[in-house]
Length: 478
Image 1 (spheres, rainbow, N blue to C red):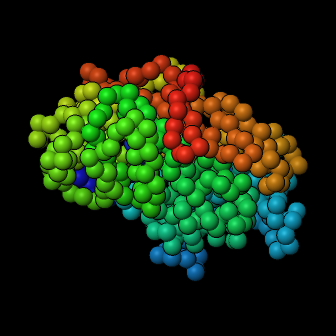
Image 2: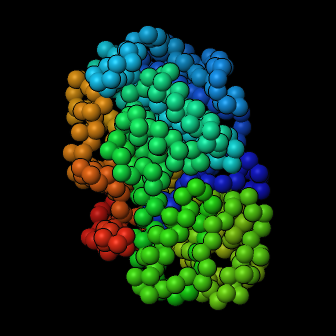
Image 3: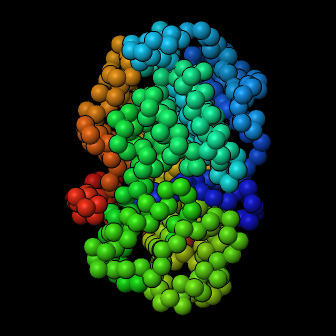
């Protein structure tokens, strides 16, 4: 793969960033590992009869490859793939409020679920989409949940907020989905979240942008991007930074992320020499690094997309400057190969476990093996792990609700989660009025050609009334 490929720039680890936590935002928007190619803009998976069959199987009920354009959508982003064996007309379409709307997408034998992903443009969130699908296919192969299988319908927003809002409306008003699960669309989530909040549809997962906290129907599975920087900054303070330069990938919520990092550093009496929102298309980093050095930076704290990390470390190596460096979402095994000579000593932050470091644990191993079973060759990405966790949380909530399923019951049930253990995240707790469930991170350091854990468990924090952070007891991996 060519590291300068323009299509492959920008997040997902974090995507976010790449996908994108900022420096401490519990996870970055990034790690979009796969090369951009021809992708269907919207894809659907029938919950009926998948029988554990992966792509390419001839078994009835598998994901089919038929697609058709739908009028009234933006930029041609409206093709939808229906699965063989999917039953049409099983969802109530009455417009009356109350019970009918609450059970939208639920039929006797299936539950219809939706998602929005950035799969064309600067991000490639296909691994996240495929992670949700793989989890649902695994569950369907085991017989479904309470007698129902899961049907998944997703759309590509093309990194365009307008297309994202169109997709949100289509999922609710045309596809009649019961819930939104595992979506990953950094440029669309803020506006689409406002629409989902008004509808009251349960939303599990996403990038944890500020708009996804507050409404009772949202349940994030990663650290709050508008607040988590204060928590991660506490670990920078422990690392001895004095005059850091802070850089965050430029996204709609970057301002909140930067403010959060500054607040955490201020608790330690530290003021960054600069704090910049940096465009992912910036061709080179020489001028930026020279500016940081002129301003007296003694360390770097960055939350970027994967290709920006490549350019950053190439420029650092070129200038022979290797200050203490803290990253969010830089543990990208594919990109790391380009700059491994410049990574020695770098500290990296993730809000999910990095599977490559933890294949000895059953959770990461199940994630990797299941994803590769249904989607051979897909590269593991941290943002994709967030989507896997969302699917796992959703399925557990369905099990707890039982067969008499409504949106209200699902939301009530999710608020009973206490220290729920997932495959690849810290234990999740949702409290009434507080759905900020992920306040722990894994800290990794690059040593002798690879990543290794700095601590043997998740490092955690809680928030002070003014939005600062205090450390709290750690939680074990796995």
